[in-house]
Amino acid sequence: MSKSKDKNKPTSDAVPKAVVSRLSLYLRELQRLQRDGVVTTSSTQLGQLLGFTDAQVRKDLAHFGHFGYPGVGYRCSELVSAVKQIIGTDHTWPVVLAGVGNLGRALLGHRGFSHQGFDIVSAVDSDPDKYGKTLDGIEIRPISELPEIVLQYDVRLAIIAAPASAAQEVAERIVSAGICGILNFAPITLHLPPEVAVSSVDLAIEMEQLSFAMTNLRPPNELLSEEKPSDG
Amino acid sequence: MSKSKDKNKPTSDAVPKAVVSRLSLYLRELQRLQRDGVVTTSSTQLGQLLGFTDAQVRKDLAHFGHFGYPGVGYRCSELVSAVKQIIGTDHTWPVVLAGVGNLGRALLGHRGFSHQGFDIVSAVDSDPDKYGKTLDGIEIRPISELPEIVLQYDVRLAIIAAPASAAQEVAERIVSAGICGILNFAPITLHLPPEVAVSSVDLAIEMEQLSFAMTNLRPPNELLSEEKPSDG
DNA sequence: TAGATTGTTAATCGATTAACAATC
DNA sequence: TAGATTGTTAATCGATTAACAATC
Figure 1 (cartoon, rainbow over the protein chains, first blue to last red):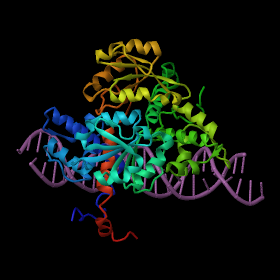
Figure 2 (cartoon, rainbow over the protein chains, first blue to last red):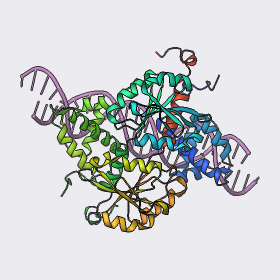
Figure 3 (cartoon, rainbow over the protein chains, first blue to last red):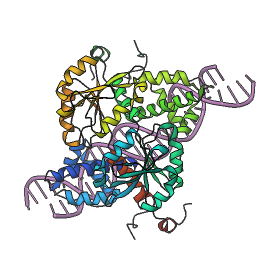
Figure 4 (cartoon, rainbow over the protein chains, first blue to last red):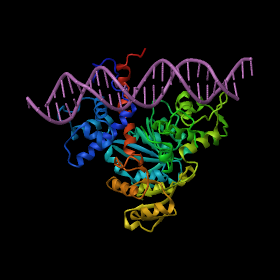
């Protein structure tokens, strides 16, 4: 079954990491086009909107099948469905949130999430004072109940919004409970078995990219004309 | 001045994007080692901690100078200082926050930020009901006052935590006010002049990476033994 | 048909890794 | 000195782009 007539490409483990994140960008852009009433688009248009070449857009999509019509382009609604299915957000994932501090509460409040394929169904914390309290309709439970929560809601994804000092241990408990995908907001590198998927967002690191750009790519104007005589 | 004895490498515009984000990871890890009392480290150790090869660590650092001692390794404190200087966080950047909703408030509360080189000095919003109110010691001001804020605090970086519908316009006003680095949390692609540095964090996109991994890289166990007979 | 745009192959480009002389 | 580890060059690997036949 599936597409196994190719040489020895094992279904899809040959998909580069970068392709997957662009896939999400295509989806976001396609949905925006849809909202604007656009019915058909092209690799050229998508590329321009996102800053990629048309060739890259076609190549990326071609990893997963033939979604376009030569001479016509891509139908937005069809491509949205296809990409959602590839990404796995053609259904909603129940998610557990670990850590209900500043950031955790913001994530709970931000339920716009749910119609994008993710729904926070439960929250845990290690502070007993918080147990039993309800935030945005979600009861905060002890972290020790993670195994039951996972079973109860068939959860496979977790978000860690715990402080750095607790994050590794929290991650291990999450994995022990049977979860195999983690979005980590704590500013540490998690050390987990390779079969666990981890995405990380570190605020400081994002800001540092900007700081670097300011410092190195944006000389304070005096240097601009001095250091680089011209460029040819 | 600076290091201009090399061939014709124009200071640093040849630094690949990926190198810069690893630089931030090195810094984070080095600071953790320091806290743990480690004085000296090596490319091998750093690589293992972060999941890179030793060669990559050395090559990344070599983009910026000679920071190591052959036969010895790198002194953590020296390398921390050097990397901070390269990144530009050897001093603190004043930052303006645009949008004080759920996420914006969390960012304001999360002031751990400041000793990592970034300090939110002002916040703006487009909701008049919020003007004049104070959150975590920061007064919320009208977005129209951005130009004055930029001058007042010498701000060069902004964080956008506005809703998607407002983000492009907010970004344009931010750029008009003279800011040239933006961390964007809104789920849209900002279209701005190329000299403006933009980092983006989209929660949905991060989660989608996990969803893809669950869906495609983690077959429900039946397929595991069927499709791939062995591997030798 | 003429014009447009796909999917794909081959060519280019860039980034990672391996290997090793130089150094402490 | 022997052992360790750097900085760097050359070899490998992978990803992006250009080009074009096939298609509508």
